[in-house]
Length: 146
Length: 146
Image (cartoon, rainbow over all chains, first blue to last red):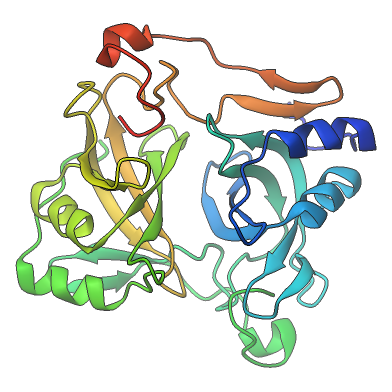
């Protein structure tokens, strides 16, 4: 059975993780969210120090919304929570991989994944269905951070 | 059987894809490379217009190396080629997903994936073995773009 619970880390351990992250000049790092069991890539968003700390403390994926310039705990508005399964970092520390258990849908369009368009000979094809109404999710189009 | 060949796109179609990409002020967009069949996330790198065009024309993943400030056809130095299977774009056009068939290893450390470290209670754990010697790959440490 796949382990789907994340044991929150201590502040000291989190400090060590943060030391390994190569943040941009704006203090951000891109984070890929992947469904832990299917391997599906759900979305890409940005984290800052606070959102990494809170993610590793709470076991829920938190980001930094560049459009709103605000801390963003995924699912607080929409209910579409990402429970953390595993937190990974790449070789040069400038990208995070969050293996998560996504409740419902990741995308603000109501699709499971944000990557619902593929390049084909007749242009960009939409391959994934809308599973939830964006209006039902958060009462209006607030963009990809929701 | 999974289709693992990519049919190169016409320049007109590629123009349409490029119109849908939201590049940074530097003319770049982050691209996630995922092994098409296992779902494993191999690496994250950056593309510019030229590297997207060449990727969609040639069916081989090409990037822009920020460290070298140069066009980079993955595998030209190391032999560790990524053959494109599918090119996807996210909802707001600011991230690319390349589903590829990775020959050998993706990481300059000689590991299959760049995301070989996970956060755990005792700090960052290395989970993946070195499969190829970095020296054998490209004769020296040239960093993550190789």
